[in-house]
Amino acid sequence: MRYIKTTIPDVWIIEPTVFHDRRGYFFETYKQSDFQKHIGRVDFLQENESSSLQGVLRGLHYQLNPFSQAKLVRVILGCVLDVAVDLRKGSPTFGQHVAIELSSDNKCQLFIPRGFAHGFHVLSEQVVFIYKVDNPYHPDSERSIRYNEPTFGIDWKIPDNTSPILSEKDKQAPCLENGDFNFIYNQ
Image (cartoon, rainbow, N blue to C red; front, side, top):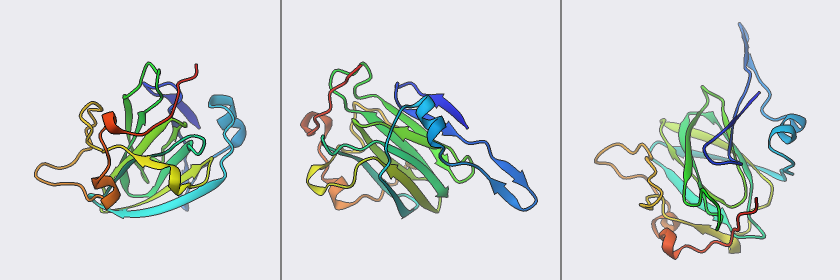
């Protein structure tokens, strides 16, 4: 497995070593000792799976402290543009984002630490998306920022003359200026 730093410290791309033969393929999706060596200790407590159709955009979501979540995300069917946005007050990369295509072909994963908003846009006909989290879902602390916040400058790869398919919650998400987040950057 290869651990690749991104433009935002603490956000990592994890590229597996895939072994192919005539039967198919094999690769490790997670090895605690390697993960801790490169990223540090994260105690994942839960794994979730979602399925979405092409054009669905989920995000940008997060949970307030003390219920914030670190996530390790990957795609097992299809392709998404996956995005993490730094919402840590005082961070030198506050408001910046990392965007990467995650697919069943490239088998890459993205590690998103606490203090980040997360979202994805489905680029394929369908996607099955898996994510590990280190804190359970806490509905009262769930928040979002609108996906098309101008200061983020995210190219979601939405085709011209189309709109993404959004949940009602995501349609009502506030802009960054009106967002509710309580993350503090700690060096």
